[in-house]
Length: 244
Image (cartoon, rainbow, N blue to C red):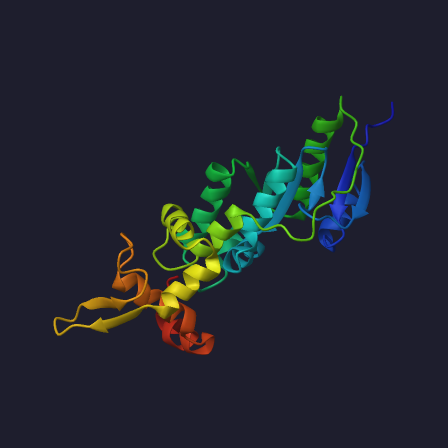
């Protein structure tokens, strides 16, 4: 009896050991340049594969959030495979709480399941198992996504504003509602003026944040430093005790 060979679409950037592992699996592996997800195994299921260190790198440069949002939008049954999760903590300069926060965001905010694997072999076997289950009674015919080149939406703007110091999702919505665009938020911060009182407290003296509840002088000063301090100086200041 012939073994059922599911179709697995692999992004062409998935190379090396992971691709070699698929060569020993009874599947129809097809290499494509995917616009979202690393693997497709049905018309509704995309899989994002992250090694532990890759996950942290994508959190640091904010790719992780846009990647999973886009994948979930086009493939509602999306899945994240976290390979070798111990490598999440190899990189210095990012607190474990930030890593777990991103994982919680994927699990509870985007409702994307996450499965851990030890290595490339387990990852390939896991993807193959899901593909067999998905395609046993529903043959998968791959159709490339037609995604517009420019996709800017509310979630991306919220994620950008949440990168400011002291800004939660709720506060990001307040800022965008007040200033309309992320650029206007940045300009409002830059154009605000503060002074230090004799008591040592910081006071807003001008700018659009004076009458905006929940955003005081401390918020403005911290984010002005965030926006204006050169990167090499930031590293020098934080290197001894970097807990971000």
